[in-house]
Length: 371
Ligand SMILES: *[C@@H]1O[C@H](CO)[C@@H](O)[C@H](O)[C@H]1NC(C)=O
Ligand SMILES: *[C@@H]1O[C@H](CO)[C@@H](O)[C@H](O)[C@H]1NC(C)=O
Ligand SMILES: *[C@@H]1O[C@H](CO)[C@@H](O)[C@H](O)[C@H]1NC(C)=O
Ligand SMILES: *[C@@H]1O[C@H](CO)[C@@H](O)[C@H](O)[C@H]1NC(C)=O
Image 1 (cartoon, rainbow, N blue to C red):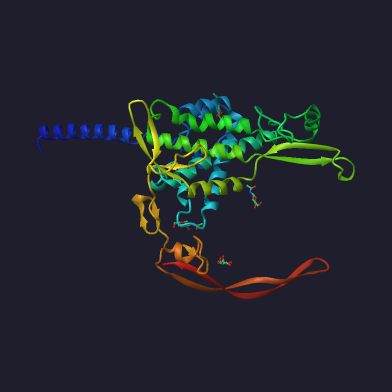
Image 2: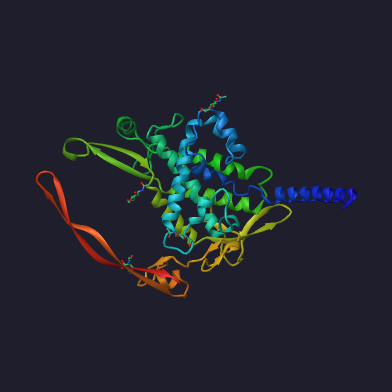
């Protein structure tokens, strides 16, 4: 090989590197702004003691880093909310072909969560809802320095709370601070999607919409709770406050939105860039609906490029007609039944004094598994 040739290949290599770098930068806009939901894994033990933790975090992007610096004491709650998102998503989808197990690969999302699918819409909305809910509840529990008890509920008939109600409330109850939860989440979760680089990207628009839908849902689940005080429950004095439901209630409501989500496409006109229902006969979606850009695979067979793990080996229930039933779960491929004998302790008796004796019981357990 002559030196001249080596020279050429070196230049070729540089050219290749440049092209690869440019392609890399162009192909990976942070259109979902959802890297932060991986905080649960890498930053669980991070001490949010000073701004350097925010600055060095690989999972926070620009407007989030400065929010983090100004709200260090809120960061543990942000991390906590991502655990809530993981658990709730897997819990809601455990009986489905797509069971949310891929959320664990965050921040390197697999195609099922990276291509603007219905599943991505759900995770996006849930992450915003979990953050708002977690913050609102931590506020009213007195865990955060920047917020506390939220607004008082309206009195029956929609009137503003009376002075007596305010007085009773002061010692009796504390509303979840929903306003704070929604406001912080709007800045934290929507911020990255509103930067000039992301603003007009169809996926950013989709994710922004779904974040807002998640927050609207949280707002709509606030309920007035009351407690009676006074002699033998006479309810002479009643304290009322606003409370958010358990996250599984919110997760369930979002799963219904997921089922009814609207497929949209990006329409670029001179005046606007917007997402419109793909099927023009459908009525427009509202702020409360989830939207998605890309239809999902049926998740029956393994196809990693489509983000499908397939359902081979998944547990199913042969008598159920629902999604966890073998018919739907195994996509018609059939199932195999494993029979095993389990030994358990049973008929336990407490003996004076102080030990417990049990018998050993054996029983047969059957487990259906998709082929
Ligand atoms: C920030 O906190 C870390 C961990 O507690 C510590 O090691 C570091 O010295 C602190 N940096 C500043 C600038 O205070
Ligand atoms: C929500 O409520 C259900 C049942 O009411 C309970 O099993 C679950 O632990 C609760 N979840 C949380 C996060 O509190
Ligand atoms: C979820 O699906 C994956 C892929 O099919 C499977 O490996 C995993 O065991 C499932 N998890 C649960 C809890 O069923
Ligand atoms: C299977 O489904 C049937 C019908 O829906 C239900 O009664 C049964 O409890 C389920 N079995 C298991 C193990 O979940």
